[in-house]
Image (cartoon, rainbow, N blue to C red; front, top):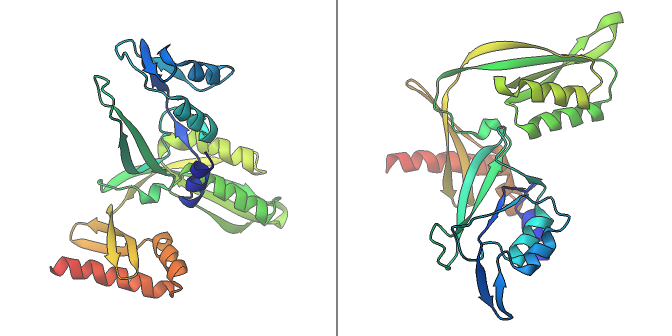
Length: 270
């Protein structure tokens, strides 16, 4: 079990989300003899547990093992479906060997909270621009509010210095996000800042179609972002990807980013 927590830390996984656990029914033969499904150890761990669980009557074998249930119970932060504000970045499968009559596999999905890392196929859409004026909060607290908004997955958020009522120096908080996220964003701002209210506009915008590629360089793999708008094209290196390699190889980050762009254009010529 310790290995799982170490693995989550090494992969920088901040939160684990799990759907409903689905077990089979009937009986299964184990070292101790024939046992009912769910097996006694799983039933024992289900006592006073909030882990969502259901059984399939059409699968006459075990689908949830005691080890698997224990791992899920210990590492899962939230049970439910994929939150709307998260973006699917990678998908992997672990396949079992037991014949179940259907696909016997566990699917793992790596989710990213930053909407800016999402592939974009449209050229225009609408967004909300949310504002709140704040004149009685410390920089540390404002930073916490911004972190909560980025963790939620807004497109962008920033502070602008302003002068508020009675000529007080203050900040205007601005948030850009999709329209469906309005109520969640209002709640985050009200909960994590001193403001008593927010205002918003629905805005139209033109955007570049966007996709991401992994480039193999002599220093390692670097993610790049490619933007296309008609005949125009922009290529930029994802900072976090380059920063990781620069730290690991003790290189200037500019060197890593230049090498990634050079390799990208070299591949186009092949």
